[in-house]
Image 1: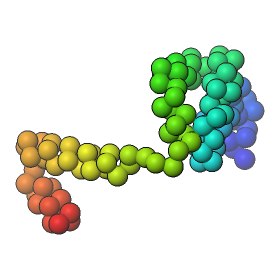
Image 2 (image 1 turned 45 degrees about the horizontal axis):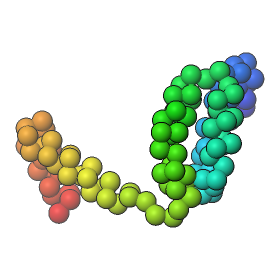
Image 3 (image 1 turned 60 degrees about the vertical axis):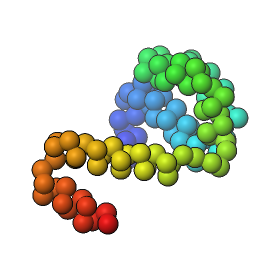
Image 4 (image 1 turned 135 degrees about the vertical axis):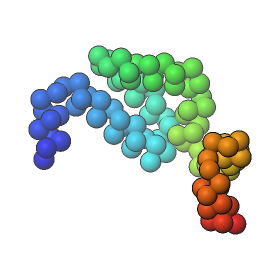
Length: 108
């Protein structure tokens, strides 16, 4: 109820909320074909941050449409990369021995 009241008093936030929810729906329902119409709708609003996002998406539009449409993703690979980077940071002394010990014991 509070969100509705806030959105009613702030048109910019209301528009941003609509576009974010629309993008989330497009992502969840794998409707990459809707991306061009979403980008057009975003550009019609006075929301500079979304315009920046739209410009970034346009630079690699085909890949973004594929990622919103196809069932494959690189989530597992990204997870492994993230874990390796974390361990690497720990090995360079940015984390104390106690934390490193816990990490090793929990992972293995």
